[in-house]
Image 1 (tube, rainbow, N blue to C red):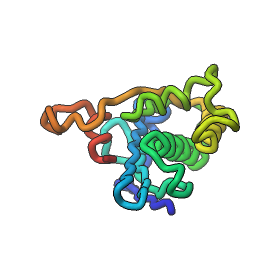
Image 2 (image 1 turned 90 degrees about the horizontal axis):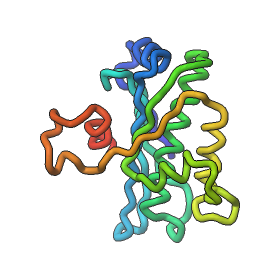
Image 3 (image 1 turned 90 degrees about the vertical axis):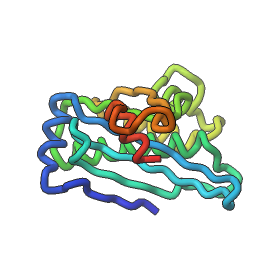
Image 4 (image 1 turned 45 degrees about the horizontal axis):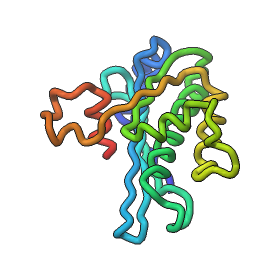
Length: 172
């Protein structure tokens, strides 16, 4: 199940402008709880440069309990963020722009964005999600990938964190 929330939908014009000028951010985070019948979910968002205007979603990660793990939920979150970018391109009729994609799952980012690796073949784990994410990347020219450290608010006040880290805390 996917749940979509508009973050101050009256001002999506700000999101459009941020994508066009390359200051929009997409942030995702996955959550896997093996102790709770392998519950797996991901949250992801696409916001303007202020972090106040955009789209926010969450989803139950597809797959049965035997395939759920922390890596899979991070890849699913990235896939969701890429979906929001493609959706916004369709809505805004964008043909150019940039969105910085942030995730605290560094290996998931690497596997999704580094096409030279063998990961993503039909034989690799999580290939369904990785291949879907790579399909989005091929269809949109607006992505960059960045790693953001998870749970930074455990050590630093939330207000002092970079916007991407603040949003990552919110996605968590």
